[in-house]
Image 1 (cartoon, rainbow, N blue to C red):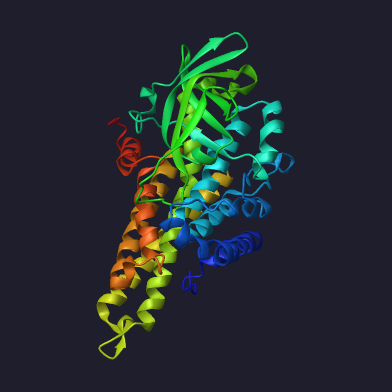
Image 2 (cartoon, helix red, strand yellow; image 1 turned 90 degrees about the vertical axis):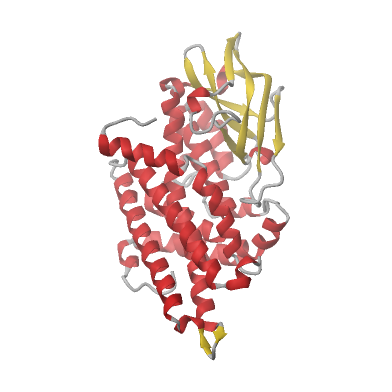
Length: 385
């Protein structure tokens, strides 16, 4: 954020700050100027994909031999934070490609699958999507209806997945389906017969994100594309969600930071009653509350990032961070929109764009209610699902 009154920067390494600042400059120069029109016209800015790849931001936590850069957890978090300062759609793209597609191939796939897919995905030559959610199966993925039946040399998949980020532009999908032995994961390429996608239109949030439906009609998937590590069942899919939720916790605060900084600048320059509105007590209270909440979230995110690096992170901690960041980010965005008055609803300022995007971020990868129940079970020992 503008200035650093409590010296949070002293908690990051020089390499972490270098990568963060590099991504921040990229966002300021290449992302922010595109997002007003991308949001208004509901178009994902695909020219940014090779730039993201060149910066090494796709699958950056993976080993260098597979196209990654062995980035630590805090570095990845800071990258998500800076990308979402630009727009939630861009951070969502990177999260899906990295945490929901490359990660399950790396974690649950074979060496041959690693070699076939991961370097090209890191280079932005192959785009992935993650097919878990269905029209009647959101918070309860175990109730999915998509099936996979074993056949000679592979599997036959039938079903559909809804609200899938990257689906309209994806070259492959990580599809989770029910087999006679439980839920399993598959790498399904767009070229496979019986695989189709359809874009979801008329969204009023995440408009610059390519979101769609994946439709599987007697789609044959060869054994070579089965993820053997998914034999642990739904747990394998949920491990991927934990990875993504970690990035979301950082990303949502990036959107909040953007809103706060715009509101702070506006409050210093908007003159009413012969003085800047930032001189009024109520405006200063809102700005202080916004700053304090963002700072608290940053420190929580940093703490769980260090725990992740030490192998001590669990899914409840990530639920807490994701829930906390989304609530704070929405509150900050709404306060910023109020400070900007009528200008707060204009796309000439990024606040309203961030505010409506955050409504989706608040819901996806686990609703606020679900995260409350996950944390509640940890606190009480009682399952409320």
